[in-house]
Structures are given as C-alpha cells and as structure tokens.
Amino acid sequence: MTTRGIYEIGEMPPIGEVPRQMYAQVIRQDRFGVPRNAFKVERVDVPKPARGEVLLYVMAAGVNYNGVWAALGSPVDVIAQRQREGDPSNFHIAGSDAAGIVYAVGEGVTNLRVGDQVVTHPGQWNSEDPFIKAGGDPITAPSARIWGYETSWGSFAQFAKVQAHQCMPKAKHLTWEEAAVPSLTGTTAYRMLTGWPPHTVQKGDVVFVWGGDGGLGTFAIQIVKMMGGIPIASIPSDDRAQYCIDLGAKGCVNFRKFDHWGIMPHWKDTEAYNKWAQGARAFGRAIWDALGERRSPRIVFEHVGEVTVPTSIFICDNAGMVVICAGTTGYNAVADLRYLWMRQKRFQGSHAANDEQARGFNQLVVDGKIKPCLAQLFPFDQTGEAHQTMHEGRHLPGKMGVLVGAPRTGLKDIP
Ligand SMILES: NC(=O)c1ccc[n+]([C@@H]2O[C@H](COP(=O)([O-])OP(=O)(O)OC[C@H]3O[C@@H](n4cnc5c(N)ncnc54)[C@H](OP(=O)(O)O)[C@@H]3O)[C@@H](O)[C@H]2O)c1
Image 1: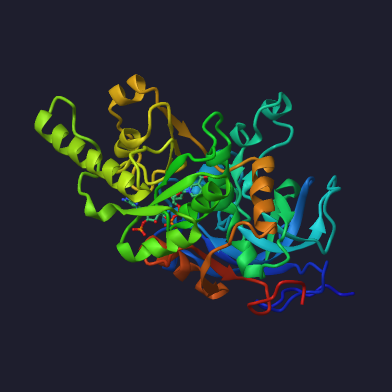
Image 2: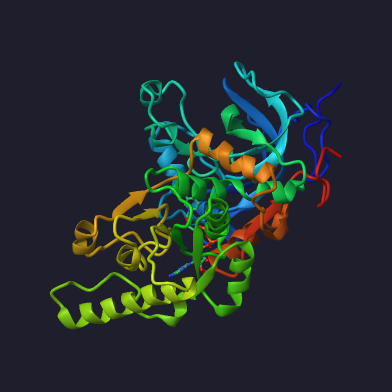
C-alpha cells in the first residue's frame, strides 16, 4: 500500500493509513487578533504519536472559548508560553474537543487499537510527574496542560495527537458532530459539581448556574438535575428561559434586569456600597422567586468572573460554596470578606477534570442521560468564523461544532 501525501477534507483515508501531510486550521503569532483572521488553513506534516500517545483522525471538533483566547493571543500568547517551556514550535492548532477514530498507536499504549471510535477530554499531564507518582490529582499537577490550548496539536486538523488516557468511548447513539461537543465544558462542569466534597450536589440542593444557556451552563443544569439538585439559571434575556427549563432548570433570572455588576465599591464608600448591596440583595430575591421559596443556593456555579463574583459570594448560602473555573469578564475578584468568614462560605477554584471525572461525565453521555446540545455546526473552512461568532457573543444557546474529517453530517459510525 502506498501512502498518499495528503487527503482532501472529508475524503477519509483507509483506517490506519496515515498520510504525510494534513490540512489544519493554524494560528500564528503574526495573525493574532480577531478569530476570523487568526485561523487559516495550512498544509502541515502529520505529527507522530510519541510514547503513551495516539493519533486520531478527527471526524468533528467542538468550539470552545479557549480557541478564541488562543486566536487573540490574549490573555496568554500560547505559542510564546510553550516556547518558554522549551517547545520550539511556532504555531498553534486549537481545539480541545474531538470525536474521531484511532489511526496510529504510540509505544506503550495498550488500551486502544487502530479503528477505535473515541471522544477526548482535554486534560494532559506527564505520568512520570513526581506529584502524580506521589498520588496527587493529575489535573492539579505542575505538568498538567489543556490539550489544544496549552499544547500545539488540537482538534481543528485532520489528525490530532492526544495522550491515550484522554480517549473515552464515543456514544453510539450520537452523530460524530454531536459526540464532539460536550467533553470540555461538560467534564469541567462535572468536576465543579462533584469534585469538591462536602460541596457536591446533594438531593434538594439549590444550585445557581451562571450562563445557563452557555457551553458550561448547558451541562451544569443537566448534571445538577440528574444528581437530584434544583438548578436555577442566569439568562441574558427572557426568551432564553425555556431552553434552560427544558434542560432541567426550575427557574431562571434575567441578569440584564439588574445593574449593580462590576467590581464592588469600597466598603468605606457607604453610598456606593449600599447601592451595590441593594442590587445584590434584589438579585438574591429574584433567585428565591425563581425557586418559589426563600432558600439560597448551596452551590454557585461561577465562570463569569469579575463582574459577578461579589454577588455570587453574597447570594451563596451559609456554609455554601462558590466554585469558579473562569473569569470571562475579568480577573479581579473582590469579595466582602465579612460575608465569607462570618457565614463560613467557600470560594473554590476548579479547572478541567481528571480521568475519573471525565469518564464519569462521558458515561452519562453514553447512557443518554446528558444531551450534547449541539446548536450550530460549521464546515472546516469556517472554523475562524465559528470562533468569531463566539467572540462576538452571537452564538445560539448550547454548543457549536466543526465538521472536520467526517464525509458528511449525521453519521454515527465509520462510513
Ligand atoms: N477552566 C476550565 O476548565 C474551563 C472549561 C470550560 C470553559 N472555561 C471558560 O468558561 C467561560 C465560559 O465558557 P462557555 O463555554 O460556557 O461560554 P459561553 O457558551 O459563551 O457561555 C457563557 C455564558 O455566560 C454568560 N455571561 C457572559 N457575560 C455575562 C455577564 N456579564 N453576566 C452574566 N452572564 C454572563 C453568557 O451570556 P450571554 O448569552 O449574554 O453572552 C453565556 O450564557 C469561558 O471564559 C471559558 O474559557 C473554563
């Protein structure tokens, strides 16, 4: 069998045949800026899987905010960051969610074979990391990285190089494009809601979910509901309420009806502080109204960041937890410490997920208990446009996907 130099997008090589080159959506430093211009299709050599790695033929990929951050080169220039760590590569292939087929297996991989149909979670680490060897949670290890953001070979390419432990079974009832989208945000939400005992969702717990119609919120609502909790979701407009209620939210609060957002005023500025506190109280009351009883959230699911954290800490119940995985609006999280310590609340950072948590979430998808919520699908050449849509906040509720190597939409298996 002779190996072809390159295959066109959607033209699948025979299973296990790896061409020399591939098409990839590449970000380079001189193109940093709006995603529409930063992503560009280039021909690049197909990477070889190293020890413990596999090469995936990417059928479809999921769109996430980290592709927007990588394109902008902000808040971190991911290429320069990697170069500082000793990786000489001068490009970035984004994409931290994939559904695909194993085409090559690196040395030492025993749990996967060529032809396996998988989805990926984005947590990578060095299994020889002393922190992990000593029993530490791998996703908190010094060597932990987010694949497709902090590593070069993400899923917006015909082939992607991943560590074998990232691969999980693809749900058979989902199409490739549906299967590709839930993992990054879903596994992150799963860790946030199950990974920080004793603040895991218990039966009857009220959980306030910021951005209920977004990538994280979509899965957070479903996970909370499945665990017996009562999700209340924030929405940007009343017409988004039905979407969240259909996923399992008991009620919604339109955050645009309030105007106290932003870094909270200094406590010595009595007038401004009182105005802020009035707004935060009114927001808390709106949550009680949506719930139908006067009970505050035991868990607040945060990722909006700077403009909402003061309110999140305020509305959280005594001895409850605000768990946060992002600062989309900024990074200065100011809290009125009096509420934090007197009411013994917890402010907990959380990031991605370990293998066990990722598999826990994936099993829910495989069992059909979590819907993938694919709302928009883009062809491969529109990858930049998909991220532009996200950057401008024009995306529909739920998740966006990109069809990469699958010959057409709607396929659930190897054609
Ligand atoms: N650390 C991790 O492991 C991890 C994993 C996944 C994602 N993230 C990060 O989490 C963030 C959200 O990701 P996503 O996929 O959920 O994004 P998304 O799909 O855009 O959803 C974000 C949601 O937050 C809402 N929102 C935005 N600004 C708001 C504000 N000022 N007040 C209240 N709500 C606001 C949005 O409402 P609108 O509809 O009005 O925009 C939207 O519903 C990103 O920064 C991403 O990078 C981190």
